[in-house]
Amino acid sequence: MIKPHFLLALFLCSTFNSLFAVSQEIKYVPLAEAGQKEIDSEAFKAIDSYFDDVTIAGLGESTHGTSEFHPYRAELFKYLIENKDFNTLFLEADYADCVPISDYVAGESVDIREAMKALYWPWQTEELLALIEWMRAYNQERALEDQLQFVGVDGQWPDNASMKINDLLLSYSLKPLDSNRFTIVSDQEFQKLRKREYKDMLAYLRTYKEKDVSDFPRSSSFERSGNEDA
Image (cartoon, rainbow, N blue to C red; front, side):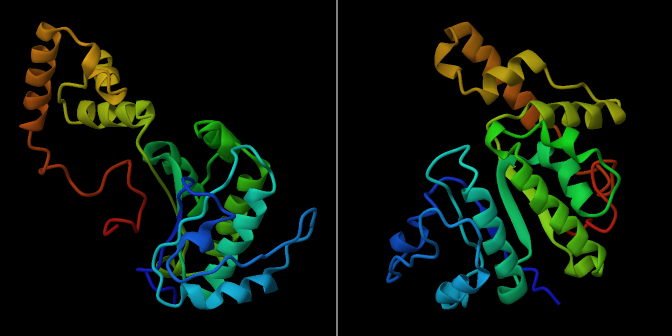
């Protein structure tokens, strides 16, 4: 059974080529040659021991939009799943944007190509789609506790998340977020506010901070069945 504390984090903030070079006491290990078309997963055995006591691995890329990085990361992800009990892919994308993709990976009926349009442009690729399809097929053969997870962990573009929050608030007859002010907060434009606007903003934030949402039931339309303890 997959150990739930093992995670694979696909944080695209460091370069893939230097991932193993910058880690303490880990030397650069060449896994492929220039121009190599086929990915040999056997090459990953050279770095297998580096993941013996690792719970989170960050895989990056030197450039956005370069096709070769995507399948290579995908193959390493599969290797870690099958050999090191990793079970979760964290993508540099907004959590709310990835919920439909997570549902699809879990086996639900979702227009996956339409769902991927919400992602940042480097992730709208056939290569990532292929990995998502592989994860869905993998999960279909396994019990819920052994299935893979697909989670967004970036918070730079909260538009979709704010809409889902508004839907939740409205479903409980609560006042929705002020979308105009929410945009200013999310874009970190406090420095552009005049003094009066700044004071109004603080009053607005304090009002919502004081709201108690602890009485919301754990199960809602935004949580898929079987994930209540996530």
